[in-house]
Picture 1 (spheres, rainbow, N blue to C red):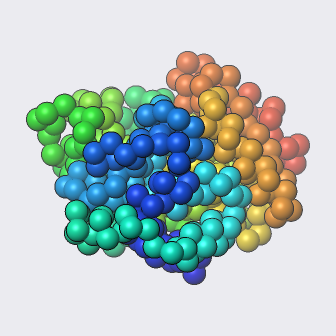
Picture 2: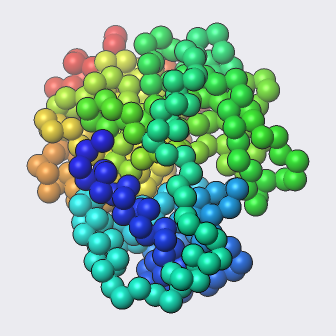
Length: 349
């Protein structure tokens, strides 16, 4: 793990010890409701769409947050970065350290007595152990799931594995009696050097053709910010997007183009650039969260001297395009959006 990523993980731990103070400082229009801080969105608008967990329970880690309207989620480092619209993780680290240097809030002692010492669920070590305990996807429900999404090129995907009974921690939005384990597609989240920093899970239904009927069928564990699920080794050109299915759809028609799935729009906005990267394609989702991520990436790429190009789907995302239009039409649409020098380099005819 890189030095900056290590600092971010340490700061996330420290911020969690004063989760209520973080919320009151960055999201002052929100309000505390039981074990959560409720607010409209990461920018701090009034409302109840986004909730931040204030106390550690068996159902989740202190400081974790979810926006029910967009599906965005993360820890308090992610929250501060999005709230402050930082283009660089280093800026967020500076901001977090500035906040932590302020006089401690009275909330800190109250939290300690109410919840006990905060503990981070889903550490990078646990994430690596889960991936190691899983098996290749060929012939499993994970393969069935991907094939049901129109993804047929399943060979040479070392970042993906399958677990037959992956633990699922239910939350307050799940129906009572939700099972504690499901089959799952397991994905390795890595840094630019290929070191695993986290694991992403997609829980599957019994048939494998749909995700499990739970409130949160996708979750990540470990150190995710800035990292991604990688298909191919990026050098000077990379295509990045949000979901695994989106990037594998791109791989169906551009098998030689290195791609990276950042797992969410907020993590896409923070993705680390390889040192020799000169051109970045962004596989967009047609929604407000995707637009916000692209805006942040535009600023970051410009500052780093990287050419940024947008890949736009006809429908909501490229997996929608693949399933409805097929690989031939999808390929034509994507190739038209490539830089001229990349068409012959990456497109399979």
